[in-house]
Image (cartoon, rainbow over all chains, first blue to last red; front, side):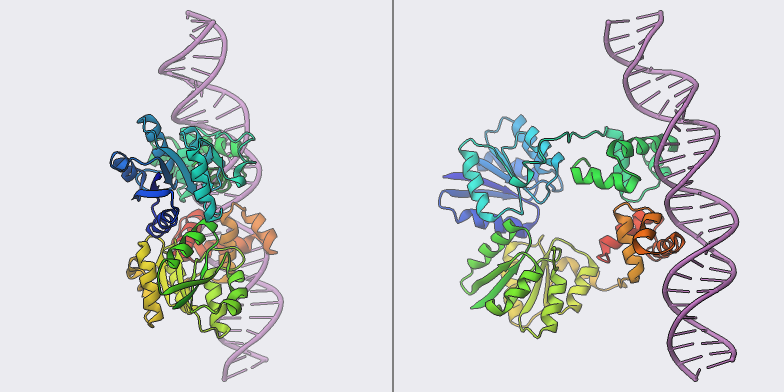
Length: 201
Length: 201
DNA sequence: CAAGACGAGTGACAGATGTCATGAAGGTGC
DNA sequence: GCACCTTCATGACATCTGTCACTCGTCTTG
């Protein structure tokens, strides 16, 4: 019997996935949580063998959850199930000790199959991401550039970003410029998009 | 017995929702589709009483699907189930003849309950959207402004947008400026964000 | 300690962006 | 025909953006 904890912030999807997994005779859903934080609090009580978690959630995402489990010496394995085929996410998930990374695009039968493979010790990466995993996709941005981009993304002007970060406008301009060069973008909008798409924001 | 067609582009979610609904004794899932187009093609063969559809899908979204069903004199009712609490979406969905609008945030039991209520003739709007439904939230943009914003959103410069739309750069600048005033935004980035958030893009 | 590396800032410049007043061309309505 | 509106376009102007070269302090590190 494989003990599963499902973590997902959209209640309906959470219910649907939990229901789906409950249909398997060798699975038992021992708990569900709407955030990484909540999941962490339930670990002791649930004693899951595997945690199936989304990435983007308020409070604490799936990657940070994996990190915490790794650090806390929990023996539960982690399977990430997400909408996003972003290289940065995959990379960080694996670095955080996740044993698998599936896209919600993949057929639902794959979920059960992947859980069994992971419990058997295998590592499972979604087929759509095999190719993306290889080339040089390390995040070239530093913390300041990331923060500047995050602010630019929501429409702040250079001046306004400078105010928010307690920096001179010129500095912000330089950082933005740096980021654009690194991302090979023609303007801040493009830079934000690429960074976002790669999972670097 | 209520005959249901489920439309959703993320295969895993599609499977999970279909599975969830199959558990109800008075429901039968007569088909699943990954796009509005595909759903439309299946209508005759499936003869569903109700179509449960996502909104954002390639090929044809849930709102256009509802429009087509309405126009084609199909008697199937439509329930929209989506991630997005965007007033523009709700408004357009209802205008397209949808009988219900649920967020994926709501608990999964609500889905079955809502389907039954809709089959009983009721109209179901997610609680989180009740308040948003009232004030003046009509899309102030015209077609050109919408298109200009869509291009600006992905990082095109004014010149590049002008080329793509066969217009003078000055015209594009004016249209962008117009849109920004209508949306009360300080720059194109903010304008794109608000429009997107309201469901006007 | 000298040589760098690094973070933050400045100044100057070209080009992009946002605002506004204005104008030409093509409908409408009467 | 004439007044009026809409759509597309210009030109002028003030700002904002993006690029670059360069200056300081402050740490590292040999």
